[in-house]
Image (cartoon, rainbow, N blue to C red):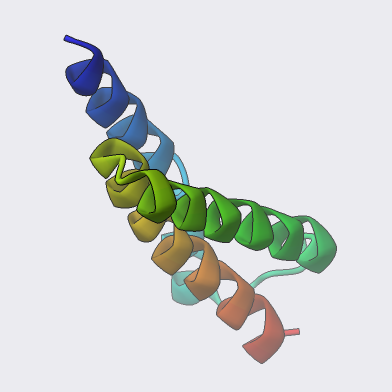
Length: 82
């Protein structure tokens, strides 16, 4: 049961960043995004991914691997469309 809660939390946590990434790339407007906040969150998901890999926790690996890609795309958009 716990693993299903972990996967569900991971899916929701990943989905919540998708509209932001989509909007940043579609509109090319990132003026409302904080680069520092997104870099800190990128570091956070990277560390959680590393922790998940170290303890072999698949929900953590899945959620933070996906989150890493999405937040990385937001940071890339912020840097490209300053």
